[in-house]
Length: 484
Image 1: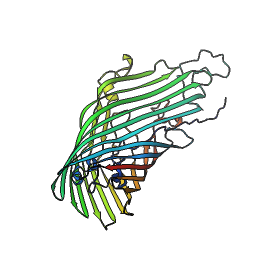
Image 2 (image 1 turned 30 degrees about the horizontal axis):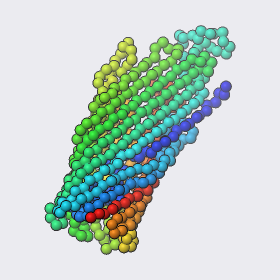
Image 3 (image 1 turned 45 degrees about the vertical axis):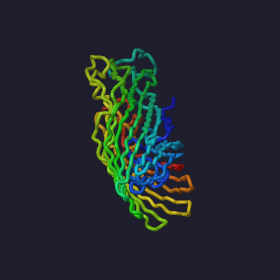
C-alpha cells in the first residue's frame, strides 16, 4: 500500500450565498430605488416609499402597481483552505440565482395616500461539503492493551502502531427566508411637508445543520477510531415593527427622515439538536453526547434605526442623492432556549446541561451605512443611474453557542448602473449591480487536517483563521404600471 499522503477534496456550494444574515442593506427594492442604491429616503416618489419613507407617499398622487426584482444574480465566493484540506488551497463557488424583491402599490384618496407592499427581503441558502483522505501515523495506543494476534508477521502487537488510513468529511447546510408584508398611510400636513407611517409583519424562517466526521483504521490491525460532531437548528418567527417618516419637497431640494422601531416578536417555534461521539477501539471507554428538543419557543429581533436622506437637482437634467442610516446595537438574546437535562449519554460520565450547550443566540453590532447616487436624464424618455452603497456586517460573536446563525461576516460594497424608460402609463427599468467583499479573519468551517491537531484535539483539529472573498453580479429588472 502506498505510504504517501494523498488528498481528495470535494468542496462545493450548490446554492446561493446571499450575504444577508448579518447585513441590513444587501437588497434594495423598487425600480428607481434599486438603481439609486437605496439613496431615496429624501426623494422617493413611487410605490417603494412605503418601505423607504412612508412620509413621501403623501406626494404620490397617482394610483399605481409595481413589480420589481433582482431578476438574475451570479455570485462568487472564494475561501482560502476553508475545510483544512491542502489542495486546492482556494475554494470557489459560482452560482446563478433568481431573486424576487418587491410587489407594491398605492391608492390616492384626496389628501391621503395608502400603500401596500410585499417584499422578499432575505432569500439565501448555503451548501458546503469537504473531504480529506490520507495515510498518516495519526494515533498512538494504550501501552497496556496488547493485540491478541501477536504471531502476525511485521506487527508489534499494539493496536494503533504505525500508519492509519484516515478519512474526514464535513458538511454545512443553511437556509434563510424572510418576507415582509406592509400597509402604509400618508398625508400632507403642509403643502411642502408630508407625514406617514408603515406597519410591517415579518415572517422569518431559518435553519442550518453542520457535521464533521473523522474515521481511521490501523493499516495492520484494522482497529478503528472515530470522532463525530453535529449540530442543527430550525425555527420560524413572526414579528412586527413600525416605520415613521417625514418628507419635505422644495422642488429642487427634497429631504426625508425616518424612524424604524425595534421589532416585537409575536410568535415562533423551533427545534435544536447536537451531539458528539469519540471512540477508540483499544480504549475501554468512549464518550457519547446527544440531545434534540422540539417545539420550543423561538424569538427573532431587529433593532431601531434612523435614516436621513437628501436629493438635490443640480440642473434640470442631473440629480444627486444620498442617504445615511444608523442601526442601533441589538444586544445578544436567546433565539431558542431548550430545557435543562443531561447532554451526556450514560450517567457514569457525569452531567452537562443541554440548556448551556444547545441555546441559540443572536445579536448585532451597531452600524452606519450610506449610499450616494446620480440620476441623469438621457432623453425625454430615458434616464440613467449610477450609485454606490455600503453594507457593513453586524456580527459581534456569540457566547456559549455551537454555531452562529450565519457565516457571511464580511463588509460588502455595491455599485449599480442602469436606465429607466418612461412611457405614458408605465415605466421599465434594467440595471446591473456589482458587489464585492473580503474578510481576512474568516474562521474555517472545519479543520480536517490531522497534522494541525493541538493537545486537546482527538482526531478533528481546531479551526484556524483564514480569508474569504465575496462578489456578486445582479441584473435588476422592474416594471411599474400607472392606472387611474
